[in-house]
Length: 310
Length: 199
Image (cartoon, rainbow over all chains, first blue to last red; front, side, top):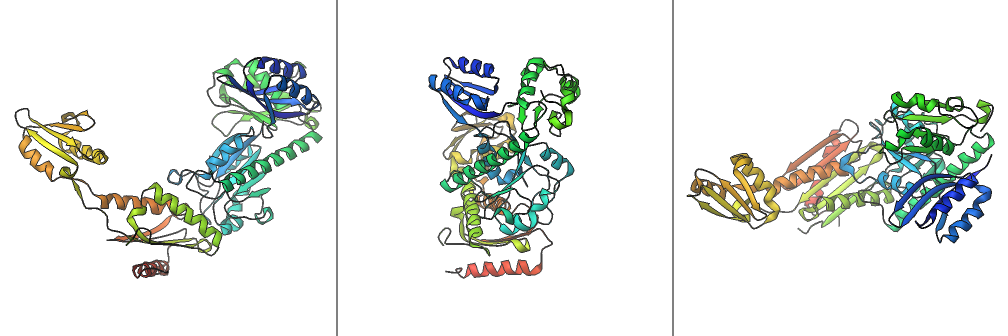
């Protein structure tokens, strides 16, 4: 199976159709296309061996192609509280900054996550967080809280955990975290100072590495079908998706897709989604009601589960 | 007393102290409280889940009446009072008071600087309005101060104690039931501030 690399193309609208056609010919995918005035941004998945060809086409069009390592990754930015009197939260900046390299982020404010002894998360919240690919927990300024008290919020979280906080700590000191990034603690201002922005860069880099690791693990036992292909088929076979006003009606995940349509109304259509090979989506994936609103969550099974991959 | 003549933040770990100082500074400027505060001391003890704050306020302005912010003219024949605004910043408070007294239907605002009131007794009402208190900076300060205290306190510290007397303000917050000695300590902090604080 072809390995895909995520890229962001920025260039003029003129003749950008050539790039899209080339990508379709090569078997790549367009994840998102944003046209602003005379500029176009394309987030795409390019087959690894064909990258030079696509790059050459991008050069011919005088556009820029940069790697967008977090494309197709849905990240939960979890804050112990999103209380209005503490705005602006640093979590807002964290969520915004993670979008630069292509990620889709959702902010989750825990109902009872604040405090030390009293801090806890609910079953519903844990399930919601587990629907994502990576969880970023944004904590405060006290090392005592981050080391001793807050890690109990990680219980029941099965996805990789990234923690941000004020003090400079080592990742090993924060029990249960896969990565700790300092200098992003509680603030009452937007993060725009040099050291804060470089901490955010460090966070993006670290999250990118974690996403790459997940992809590498996946390559050992690939998914039965690529999430991007499911996305493509939904666009073709379920026209109602075009009427959805959410920013990302189809949100790609590393091992699935979130479809922002009502589960009760559309789940049969999604289950019966047909592929050229003659299989339906329900054979290849678990389709369930998402904890986020009434959306549909598709989690694709691996090749070893299904017995084949398309 | 100068504004922010003493600004102490104490915590066991120096770097955390700086984070908190920044949070307090940000909130002071967001609420425009800095000019009103003379001396402030904050002590943080995360290991005890404890937040203590003592503040000494500077003198703030006196009460604002309608004549301070506007000129008034009674028109007995037309049954009107015309108010020409001089200081725009107090308009929301003034309108609030007028609506309460005369009802929204009787107040009109033909332009930004003019408010007209329809009434049966323009002369008497104008005399009353002249001395009506429009805004009390002290009241606004109290609101802002409480808001400030809640904003800077760590979110989980929901058990709170506060005391506001004259120019003195103390605030204690914790996650656990408050201990008497914590409040005593904060009172001692206030006394220290009264003497001029640590130099």
